[in-house]
Amino acid sequence: MWVSLFLGAFSILIAQSSLSARDQPNFVLIFCDDLGYGDLGSYGHPSIRTPNLDKMAADGMRLTDFYSAASVCTPSRAALLTGRYPVRSGMCSDRRRVLFPDSSGGLPESEWTIAEALKSEGYATAAVGKWHLGHRHQYLPTEHGFDSYYGIPYSNDMDRVSTAPRGAAKSLEPHINWWNVPLLRNQKVVEQPVDQTTITRRYTRQATKFIESNRENPFFLYLAHSMPHVPLFRSKQFEGHSLRGLYGDVIEEIDWSVGQILSALTENGLDKNTLVFFTSDNGPWLTQGPAGGTAGLLREGKGSTWEGGMREPAIAWWPGQIQPGSVSSELAATIDLFPTFLSLAGGNLLAGLEIDGHDMSPVLFEHSQSDRHHFAYYRGTQIFALRMGAFKAHFMTKSAYGRDPIETHDRPLIYNLQADPSERFDLGESRPELVTAFENLRVHYFNEVEVAPSRLESRLPNQ
Image (cartoon, rainbow, N blue to C red; front, side, top):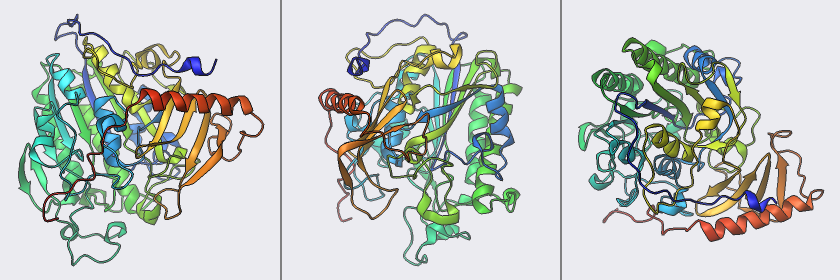
């Protein structure tokens, strides 16, 4: 019975779009970096003020059980843009978990991204912000369906200079010259090192300009903030703005940015025809102390497959289409956004494409049940945990970016996430039928989801 819920990857034939350009909705996808489940006012933070995001939730839908497909940057972003678990594209590794400036690999040309799919339906496309799917020319956004790109090609703590102090990234007074991070426009470096104190404002300005210049055309805007990944930077306007200190300042500036995006849509008469979705790539980087966020009552954070590492704050906004103030506890994930956007645009998936995402339109617009009945928590190439309905099974565990070894469990740890979201009370011993169901589900994932060779481990010559 439990195993019958497994739907697997599916294929859909190409069909002609039935929507005219005027009918096609716009899409704005706002993706934060290392934002914790408990970092927003609408998700319970007591001192970080996020009025724009709180209003976005009040006017739209807040999702309580929404997941990223990985607990670190590169694989999470690959999954978001392809609708596929990152093991399928090789954008994960058990040794080098993300891409670095010395990496030679990137997102394969063969991967069909959400930008390419929407572009084929007549959409203008733009990527603004962090990329982290390969910084060589053949891997940049403009080679993967985006008409334009403006942003930092990898994490903002990379390219640290030799004179930077130890632990510079977690400093509460970081200096921009401690990192030689480049800023790109399309494929050209326009600033190095980038002044990170103004990066959130500049990303926002680029995003609003794109909205204004495409008011007559359907568009897809991917705004991937570099913050609140360490090192933390905010503009002068937000210095001392938050009771939570530097981290709070950074979050409150992101909240300001969201307000600017929503205002630009409204002022240009686009709000009634635009779906805005806000979420994060993974959980908070807990080892960064005051420079890291919080997962609230969820266990652990970035780098782990406990809930705090992969369950994300998520808000959907579309006036007139999404019921204001609605809250959904249906199971959904970043890999579901690709098929959702494409379906709303009137398009269909490529013939033979194996995709792991499900169209979540019924959840967003009908407040009904999700077609997603289960979800895999990968760490690198391995399935550490599975969720099925309200229950979650851990086959292997490891703390968030900890030095402790991986612990393999002879019998999986099983939790009821609705009754026990903090994963404190193991039910495995008393629920043998769940143990059997999860073990069978894991076998299905092993058989159905092919693991491609890693593209994260090769390095550039002389590196």
